[in-house]
Amino acid sequence: MRLDVLAAAAAILSSPAVAHEYWIVAEPAYPAAGAEIRLTLGSGHAFPKSEILLGEKLLAGTSLSGPAGAALAYVPKRGDAAWSAVATPAAGAWRAEYALQKPLQDAPVHRSRCLVVSGGKDDPAAYADGKGIEIVPRRAVSGLRPGDVVPLDLRLDGAPAAGRITVVAEKGGATFLSAGKDRPAEWKAGAPGWYLFGVSHQGRTFSLSFRVPDAGAAP
Amino acid sequence: MIAGRPALLAAAAWLAMAPVAAPAHGLHTAPLSGGEGVRVAYDDDEPASFADVQVFAPGGAQPVLTGVTDRNGCFLFRPDTAGVWKVSIDDGMGHGAPHFVTSGPAASATAAAPPPRRSKAQGVVTGLSLIFGVFGWAAFLRQRTKRG
Image (tube, chains in turn orange, brown):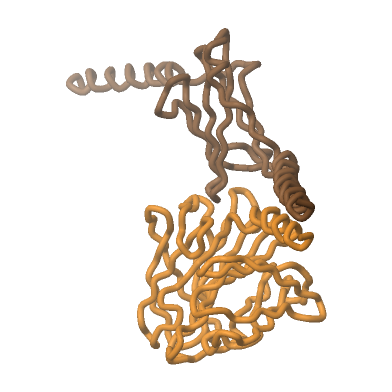
């Protein structure tokens, strides 16, 4: 009985923490080399379905960063509840990103990142850029299967950091992970689909999304 | 030489008038006090700086004024009619809030203003009270059933 009460209280009190997220997703997340992808910049309460159109004046840092320092700029177009863009990344692991930055501020208040692996050439070393707060998977995400354990590093300007990571699944539900400076958080991959990982540090937030591939999908 | 004189005179007249015309469209400023203001902040009291603001006159469906909060999350305007003015704030990141300002002798309009929102702390206390209330009743009924 006591456990039931605690569980109910925890569920109710923790729900506001995951009530509002920002993200970017790419479809497909694992395209063939040179194939077109659609990036969607979203926000809302039902990841990955966007409900909130982000303010145009806040959008910054829209880019795709790829292997060997390759960079692709993309220009998002306004939709009903999300911004979207089309890009054609070459083979390799890419970071699709955008930031939210207020006028007259020297740093963004939020940064969203999505991992895109084109042509099956995955590379976890390309998952981070060493700027600000980041969540960085240690293993290749394109080869994940449900049940796999993924170590997730929390880094601040490239250095190990400690904190709490929020995980939101496409199928619903949210969990929390804890990372220390000397140990990564460990996340057990769920069913195929999108997952959103979020962290906050001194009023600035970061989110990372990637997809657990569908069964039988080519890596 | 004589034929060019009218043109010279016209040019001289234009030059003489031009400086007079410029101040006629100038602006002047004067100090102003009063007005209505709103400060917008997040739950942690960080100011919602540079958030979009729309001001609706009493009964109006279209904004009569648009602007942004300043770096401290403040916005001021000066109502020119009595009634309840709606100030709508949107930070562009999915956070929004209405604020109502009653201007002038508008007792009936004051009644139309919505009740104040509960604070987050009040919400948490209410939530906890509900949880313990529900489970308390459940425990009570369970004990009662056992005794019966």
